[in-house]
Image (cartoon, rainbow, N blue to C red; front, side, top):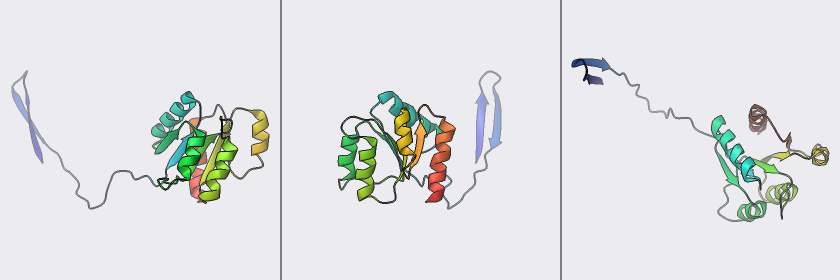
Length: 151
């Protein structure tokens, strides 16, 4: 393709060629994973959404753990590869959410966040990744990648 441009100030024309590669393959990045984030704190939820976007990881955010459990039990539920959840939430705790979801949908990986030390001790005995708040986004991405590599 050849493009001709006119510079108004000098009234000179400039032309240049653009060579475009043709391929049958899609060159846009494709995402093979989906992440769901559940946290009752809107600031944490927003921050995690921004981190996922910055990392190029598709994610959906949910602010209510009990509503998420209802959604997970519905026919509309599209299971994610990874769920990132807080532990201490009203109505349904992160532990209950993990149990409810994993009883129905096998194979989902979990990353559990908390800022409480006593919760950390309990989590060390569980088969999911634990991240203490506050955390480093690069560390979170490393855990996500390790979980996906383990799948």
